Image (cartoon, rainbow, N blue to C red; front, top):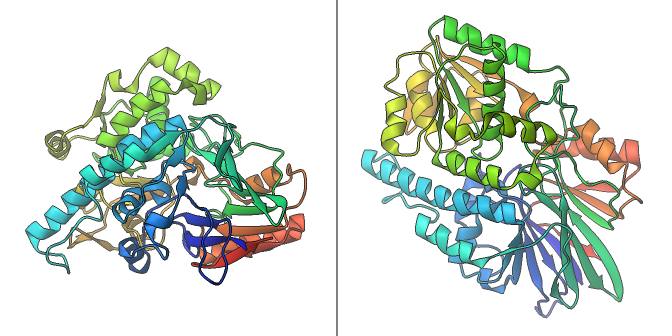
Length: 477
């Protein structure tokens, strides 16, 4: 039988890994095996510990990886897979490969930095603390990437092929349409990756890549994200409230700290800040982007103009590269990062990681969370168990680098900047399908989000929808 097995992002938002096996019998004979996404688990300890476990099938027996996009929870385990023995091709769009070229080495570097820091302060439960993979190992894995054009068909084996169609989530993001020949019939499997918003630009401003996702799909089996399955994005324009929050913070002599994903979210937020400053909606205070990866991502965004919305194209033509904007500083080195914390004047600091699971944002928050003049603004999803979720929840303290940090700063969140479709947007897209899929499996969501979206889809669409379980195998007939 051919089957799909959910090796990650089942019961949780992170760690996306979905195995396709074209044939299997109980004598152990394996068919062609492809992995759709290979993400890192983040959040609660029970999930993070799975990053250290070997895959349930030997990595060397996986024949190929199909990568939907370049976020760590979809691509961040690739160097570890290679370290475990995988040596097949990794297929992705050109923009995704460019982004992985900075994201994966940066991930390896940060893990080495964190391990060294914990060894220095002797706060790790393991002696010595080790990185999941190193910068060098991440760079080595990049040699396996193969570029694929959107809508180009790639034949992986006699019975398995795929093509990418646009998902409109981040730069280069796509869904994977997989065609499987099984039992003498062709079956189409659609793996959504992360689904971009069907946007009204007034209530969800700042979209850098063009809107989507692609309509008119046909699939026998759908494997679909459910990150925002139990809540809707606010419908009001966030800019007035954002401007008020920033202005109030500056007036009381405080600074604004923004944990932001280095890819897409940082660029989007920088564009919005620039626009609001030019219109006089917020004061012109120094803006610091403290993420080497975000700096490199700016150049990649400027390279892939084919991905732009009209608004982005016009903005770049008017103001040029963000790296050249007056008052905007992009910190590349650790010394430049430390210099930001020497500033005693109001400023805006944007730094990764977006969920405060690692990176330079930890240093800025450790310094500025105790001061009630400051404000922390969240502009992205915070997975349960992450430091970002703890801070956003209203907690009075958080542990950073093994130290308990009091939270006295103001905390604000703007959900409109999310790049994940919410239930009304998902239903709008799903109604464009040319026929009902035989089965739909929801992944990449917390249990409450996935189950609520399942019930909604069953009620509104009449679809056969199930919530995928970790390690579950489902037969493709």
